[in-house]
Image 1 (cartoon, rainbow, N blue to C red):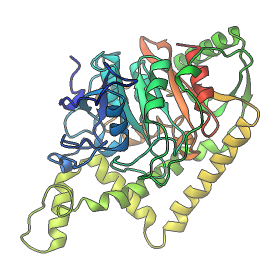
Image 2 (cartoon, rainbow, N blue to C red):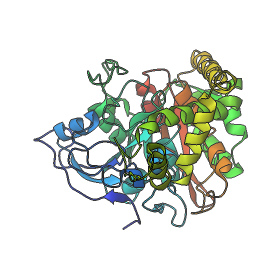
Image 3 (cartoon, helix red, strand yellow):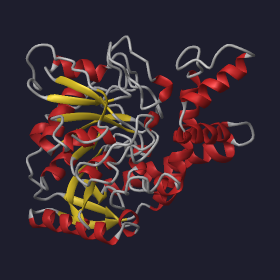
Image 4 (cartoon, helix red, strand yellow):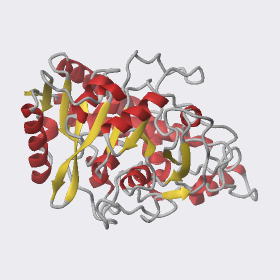
Length: 421
């Protein structure tokens, strides 16, 4: 059994027969499960038990799925390796001794190790696609608004989506069919298109136009690039064609993403004060001391770092200099993607520009971890759907290829991905 895949192993049975009857689904530990501990990988919520189910959990149960545990994750979703969890790092079953990616590393590892048939993760800047690529499984980041966020403990509200992880594209699409759709509890959701996502996994890419953003290929490791072009060659052999496109804005995407995500995290995590939520900091002395003690003891280093940076970016005198400019860059990223997709059905790039880090390798260099997100964060800034599909190995380590589609164009990315399954 792979180490630290689950934070809490507790069975939640489905209700009746449905599309997922007989299937086990592992659920990331930032998704609320009624009566079952939900920690966000943090000591701050070590003993938190939600009084209600997230909408996606209700939909799993209605579809007959059995939830077999809450999976390990980077604390509050802040990380690319699942090493910032207060409950220890998760090993990569597809590459032992290496990280499984993050922040949904436990969910990807559960699927890769065969400890769950399917899994749910969340993707704020690549946190489904990164572990999918690193663990050699399939991960889908849906269009913002396709899947309800009700019951998801927020990190970056304007960026994050719940998404499926599975051994195959068709299975990931089947899970997406179950969780997608409008939710009256989440005003950001929209009515889903009349599409059978699983049926779209037919492998038919004859005539598919693929745009390849040069900026997302040039910076990748040599072995990753080789596997990427090998996958493109395979798609061409099946009738697809490709052309190069340019996304000049993506050179600023990582900086813009982290300013926005950290700012939203600073705001969201203010509620964990030891009074309303989280462990108590004690009540001797004044409230500020208790508040400070609760957060100092409850949060890990990476969470503290992001809260401090986000608070700084939102502070008086700096909001226009950092946060507003980041939002301007986000609009530029959206515009570039829209232009590129006006002449292509999907865009393709390596999911991650690197192969999985060795365990412990990136902990002392947060910037190295942040820069690894260069290919995934632009998609979240643009609110678009993307899928990561295995594309072979480089130096014996898993490599993923990413397909990005137009808003609510999950059908196109599923079809493209299924041709490589």
